[in-house]
Length: 213
Length: 148
Image 1 (cartoon, each protein chain N blue to C red):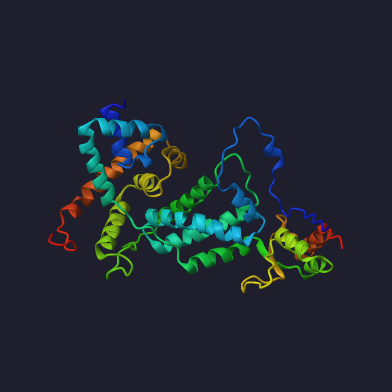
Image 2 (cartoon, rainbow over the protein chains, first blue to last red; image 1 turned 180 degrees about the horizontal axis):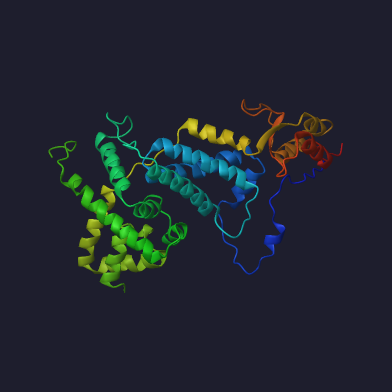
């Protein structure tokens, strides 16, 4: 019979924290996968990318209004995921919340840099021609919505991106933004009101792609 | 029963999809909606707004995915050559033992190895202190206890 005793390499520090009985241990759906990532499991690395990359990419795209910058943020975020995987202390916070925290901070940095650097125009997510994989109206609408989103105050945009587009729970979103749930709800209501006012003309525009209308 | 004011307050903030509502208000919200025609009017407007503010979901490109997977090596999840360790596993050990060893070491050993996976490389988590390759290889060899 063959025995293998592999010593864990650069293992996560678990001993002092496993004995913390005062905090309720949270249920983290990413914990198992993260453990395998830390061990360098290639399949786990791929699975983590599949699980998290789309969400971070969309978060950044919606906050920054620029798909190229969004890719940069996503790459930087995932790099930090790899570096953090071995250091992660499970049981106290959800890893997903940590990832969002990293992504948000990277977006804040870029938004701050934009404010400090005078720029004439920002790249907009607008296509001059029809999008190859979607109807023209849908692409137009999406671009218009993103434009209006970019004109919202940053905190309102953040609130609606986290809650509406990223579908995070209100408690988690409020925590990420460092505000109360009531403050979050106020930001959300204002954001929705502005979006409605700005986009109302889309609803009354004649729809040429529908039969007879 | 949820009050009309409370319903409209939550509707204004979260929109028409109860899945986005606070967890403890979803059932009460649905119940209020079904019982009050006035609320249904307000709710229909929120449905329309939700529809108006739709954004497409970006799908990461294959290039981006590949770059990010490759960046795992930059972060210390490095591929290592462990020919010697593999020889220890292969020699004198049966197929079953090899498979166990392979699984334990994170190597996929199959009769036909898939092209991207080479038998003599495996991803390791580098030591946090940044020990060099030979140190780690030494550690690995010491901990492999293969009975022949």
